[in-house]
Amino acid sequence: MISTRSIEGERCLVTGGAGFLGQNLIRALLERGCEVRVLDRVPAPIDHPKVQSVTADLVDKRAMRDALEGVKIVFHTAAMIELSELVPRALRKRVHAVNVEATVNLLSLAEQAGVERFVHTSSAAVALEKDCAGGDESLPYSTLPDLYTVTKVAAEQRVRAQNGERMLTVSLRPGGIYGPGERGQLLAPAIRMMRGGEPLTILGDGLSRLDYTFIGNLVDAQLRAAERLVHGSPVAGAAYFVMDGQPMNHGEFMRRQLEAAGAVPRIRHIPAKVAWALAELSEQAHLRFGRKPVLTRAQCRTCLYDFYFNIDAARRDLGYVPISTDEGMQRTVPYIGELLRA
Image 1 (tube, helix red, strand yellow):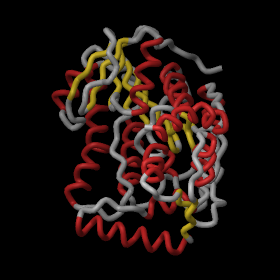
Image 2: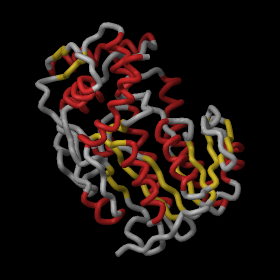
Image 3: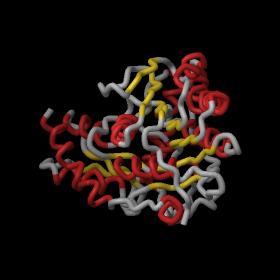
């Protein structure tokens, strides 16, 4: 059995605390009596006497030092999601600064400040390849060139390398994060498009599967990982896939939730070859004109490859027992109904 160390009452820092994961993590930490400091570009939207906001850009080292004062556990959730391969130079520099350089600075300053435990939110994308389906943490890092994958691989490598006597680190690799309150990447954008008259788009034959991570599962994994960051633990310096353990096709995932919430989405199928061509043209326009791409090659890979992983290591080392995607979707349906009625 792996030893644990309580996080009750500890002073914690949550980067990206105004985001979907960050807000849910803050609430869970407050339930454990923790003091929570938040580093984000906007104030933490949680009014509580034990929550303190440091409102600053993640690349601001001075603000980072202030945020780390007296902190014993860092939960690093902040990142920029940029899925294009072809991006304007300024955007490429910005994403690298936030996802890689800021992570490196945070690691160094955290160790100097006396932080003992560092939990990093990585991504399943760091292991995405065409033949990755069902693989575990022994898979090599992805060599795919989209900016998100490249920067998340670099950040995770730095986090794992920083693990040592003074500060213990761990990286968690979720799939697509969903649940009540999500407004960024999965549910809300699709609902906005549907309300605007756009159909639900399915790429390819609709048979490929990918992993999803219910927000409650990810928060639970974060807390479990922090508790198991003790000297001699296999968790220290490791990385873990943390998903629901029920991969499914992206179109099926969206369709089932929308229908359960009372919507009747129109379905549009785009053949794989057409999707790849559209993605390349869209990325070229992004590079030349700065237009946000309607589809990227990274999204094509996600939706056309079998993109799911084995979570046995998290079950074994973290005591991770996720609810299924079926259950996660049931818990999310009322929220989808609210978005549809908004």
